[in-house]
Picture 1 (cartoon, chains in turn orange, brown):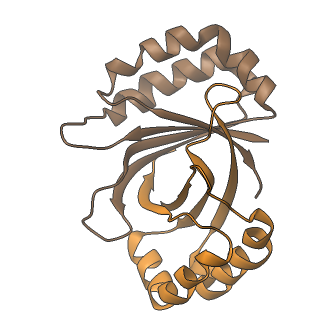
Picture 2 (picture 1 turned 30 degrees about the horizontal axis):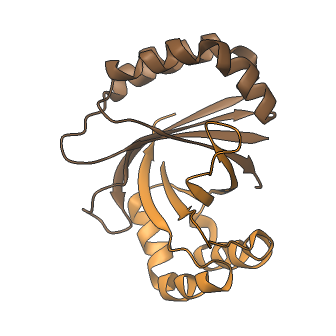
Length: 103
Length: 103
């Protein structure tokens, strides 16, 4: 199983519309990608390790696929449309990482 | 539900002993923290969005708690011992973030 993490960096003036993200963006992504995406997590940054400190990421999502190939084949054809929706909910550019799920 | 993400930055010369992490470190953390930690994920970085590119994080873990207070009360008393184990498996300093689980 692989996890595709989409990490939205926090910072001064950075905004993120969680309502749009959950109600519009993620359903659109899941409709485009289809059953290849087994599960999706969405997190909203609260703080760093210390209470009141700034979270490194304003939001994160993690999408689960059987393999890197399954991700590429399902996401690739829709990448342009999915990435074009990003300015509709945030002014930060996501960091994307593919990981192997160990536990 | 809150998620405590521990992100280990990748980079030149950075190492991470996943076997030690899974077999020694995480069981020690779970024993210290106890039932307050509902679930723990461990990911090993494979790449960025493009195949063959470098993953931003060499490894990530995500620990789930009912609340920020539950995390602080269970982790706090053992923080020193847990953090002191980090050099036994990596030479990178983790970024820690607390998030609210939205989905």
